[in-house]
Length: 348
Ligand code: AQP
Image (cartoon, rainbow, N blue to C red; front, side, top):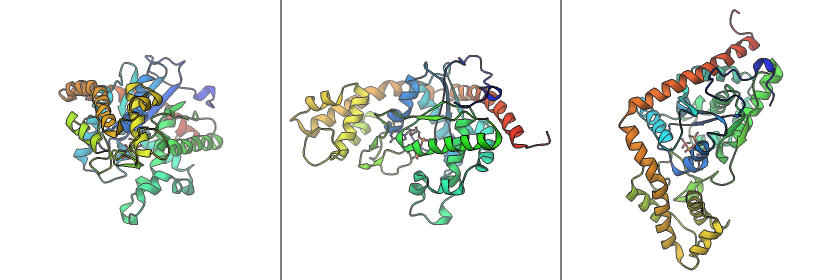
C-alpha cells in the first residue's frame, strides 16, 4: 500500500470501520445478471461483507460502450440493484450506488487519461474481443477508454482489493499501472489496488459453448442462466447444455462442457468434485443434468423470492441507491480535491 499520511483514506462514513481493508467492485447493468456473475462475483462480495469495508457500484457509464436505449439502461440499473440486494448485498454493511450518480468517476477518468498510454489500451483483450469484426464506425471511443474509467472507479476510493472474475484481471493490472504512474508523476495520491480472484468460479462458461464465458450481453438464448429465469427455463437450459463426447461425469481439460457443469454444481451445493464424480459414476449425463437443475433452482429460489418483494417496491431500492451515492460521494469528493490540487487544476 502506498498512500502517504496526507492522502490516507478520507472516508467520512463513520459506520465503516477504518481498520479494515477496502473492497471496491462494479457490475454493469448491461443485461440480466447470470450465474457466472453470481458465482464469480456477487456471491463472494456477499460473503466478504463482514471482513472488509465494501463499496459496490452499478457501473452504468460503462454500458455506454455499446448502443443501448436510455429506458432499457435505467430499467437495467434498478433491476441489477434489486438482484444484488436480493442476493445478499446489505446496505447496512456495504455502500451500494450507481456510478453516474457520483460525478467524480467521470471527472477522474479524464485526468487519468493523461497518464494512460494508447498502446496499453490497444492491448486490452476485452477491447479486442468486443471490437473484433466490427467496422471502425461501430466501435465507440468509450469501448476503447473503458479501462481508464474502471481504474478511476477503483482508485477513487483508495481501494485495497478488487474481487473480480478472471476476465477482469488485465484491467485491474492496468489500474495498478495507472495508479503507480500517477503517484510517481504527481506525488503519492492513490492506493495501488490488488485483484482478488477466487480459484473456483472465476470463469463460468456459456452452457451452449464452453469455449466462451457466460456473458450478460450474449444474444444466444441458451448461453446463460439468468438469476431471474423461471424454474422451467432453468431446467430447459440445463437439459440443452452441450456436453462432451463419452458419457462420463468427470472434471478434465478434455471435457470442458461437463467440467463447467460440475463446477457450477460444486459451487452451489458445496459438494467436492470427487463427491460429484463418485455420485454419477456409471450413470451418464441425464441424471447428472436433472440433479444439477434442482441444485441451481434450490440456490436461486430464495434469491428470487426476495427479488419479488423488491420488484414490488422500486422506491425502496431507489432510496438505498441515493443513500449509497451520498456515502460514496463523500469519499470521492475529498479524493478529487487532492487530485485537482496535485495536478494544478483550477484557479486555486
Ligand atoms: N462468466 C463469468 N464467470 C465468472 N465471473 C464472471 N463475471 C462476468 N462474467 C463471468 C464477473 O462478474 C463481474 C461483473 O462483470 P461486469 O458486469 O463488469 O461485466 P463483464 O465482466 O463483462 O460481465 P458480462 O456478464 O460478460 O457482461 P457483458 O456481457 O456486458 O460484458 C465481474 O467481477 C466479472 O469478473
